Each structure stands twice: as C-alpha cells, then as structure tokens.
Image (cartoon, rainbow, N blue to C red; front, side):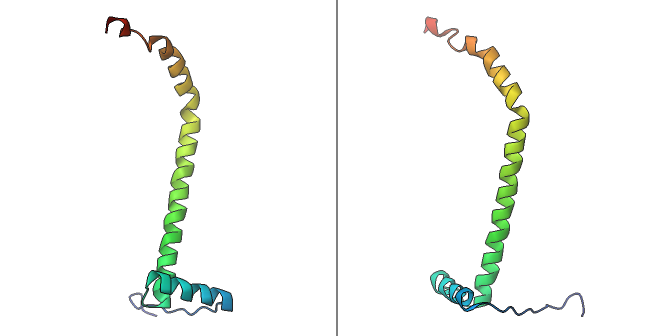
Length: 86
C-alpha cells in the first residue's frame, strides 16, 4: 500500500456498543458513525494528555513543596510589617 493512501478499518461492535454509538450520533447530531468514533478518539486522547499534565504538575509541586513551606515560614513574621502606619 502506498504511504499516501488512506487505510480503512472495520470494527465489530457488540449490540450494546453499537446502540451506544447510535445514541451518541443522535445526541451529537453527527453525520455518521465514523464521525462519532473519530470525535470519541480525539476526546480520549485529549483526556489522556490532560491527565499526564496534571500528573506532571503534581510531581513538580511535590518536588518544591518543602522549599515553599520553608519560605512561607521565613516570611510569616513579615506579614503585618508596615501595616501599623496605614
């Protein structure tokens, strides 16, 4: 097969899964079952990407947490400084 040609696939779905595709097609007002599948795959990929980003933020937060707490402890006495003059 030439690299620029489109590959086609067919999938066998259970009756329940096919009914789900049809429900989603009506709800999304999609033109075809294929559009439902494409949109679903795109959303799944975005969801996985968001979860990976959340995990990276959690890991970064954990790495700097101790230094952040220490900095807050050091700055705590300065919170009210200069407010008496107002």
